Length: 225
Image (cartoon, rainbow, N blue to C red; front, side, top):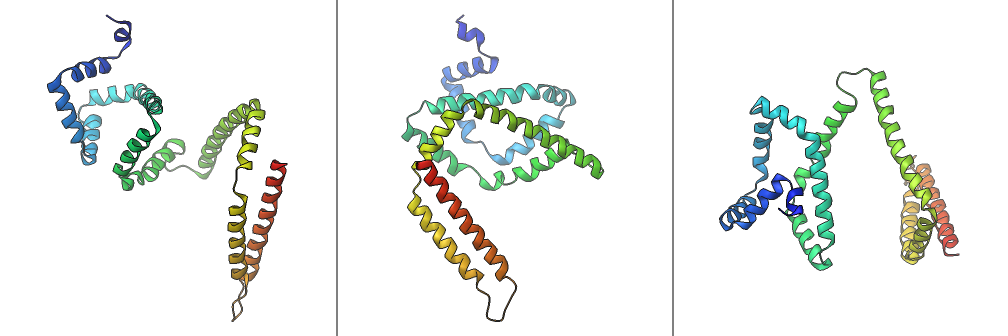
């Protein structure tokens, strides 16, 4: 037995045998072509609630399954990176056009509710909700702190890269866009004929836009200098 075969998992060994057998390979291709999103809910319900033993085993194996999925996606990315760029763009373009955007839009609502239930829970008091939110925020800040440590370690390289990128910015196009936005804001700041109270807010927006433009121009000049 080869070393790679010994290290391979059961699924990989089975898949190799299936691919090497023409009849099974054709059956697998037919099954992949017949994949329909509408059949997924029934499969999930059957796996979770069809048999208690399978359900508990599934939940117990969930961490390993997540790790497997993460490694699967990482290796998929590695393999895609090895493809020529035109072929890669063609493949990803076909994948993108076939994905159901309406189903993707349901993710925030469904998994947002799941995350809220996990982090906060149901029927919690305001104090408990606040404590859960603060704990999650502190966790996020800890992750941000680790990220900034890495940025500090590579500060020179990152600063050099940002400087080169800033020099490549099309400042002429940027200035034209900012000028148009400024003109639009000035037009909006003009008081209506019958008089109104919206002008001060619009004037504030114009002032903020002008200040932002001035700061942006100074930053660009400083980087280029």
